[in-house]
Length: 213
Image 1: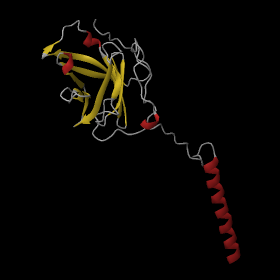
Image 2: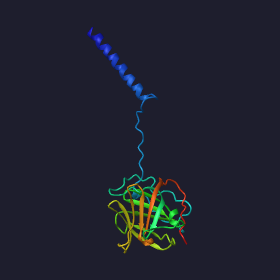
Image 3: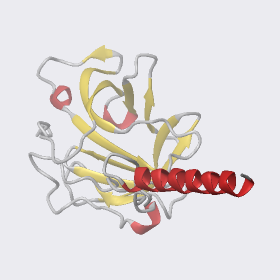
Image 4: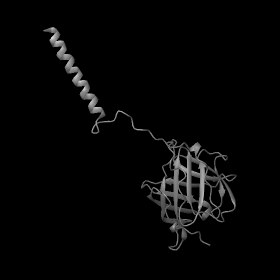
């Protein structure tokens, strides 16, 4: 009797194991192989981008940091996306309806402490670490020729650009309570522009802005 009971238990155990094995390997069940984990590149692996000769034209270039997987550094405002100006003023007064700044768009990419800002035909690619070495070393938006050297930093949740040797001049970008980006440029007649995020900027979106002659 005991041997017969043990034999029955053995058959039941075999049946249960067979059922579990069938469930794991069947098309309707889970796979026994883990799905592959894909990871992007670090900012250190992505070359610095520069403005093309003559600036980029009617469309934005392809994204620079599209496959970067590093998280944003602490204290960085999330400015990622495609932005369009919805209002602007100079020296405290609203700009005229035909001011070209009202057609301005820019795309910002961020990864780690790196930030790539494309606008006005230029590409500014920097590490926001407050050093000259890792700042923007590119060309001016006014002629796409004159060299510029800019220090980038994140300060109290604000993205700040300062020309090398001119620490008193600060171009800033910050988010307001409505999620808009407020952009200030003291070198452009005290420009204060408010921009709305209109998309993620993926691909090569149109660039309607033309610098006033």
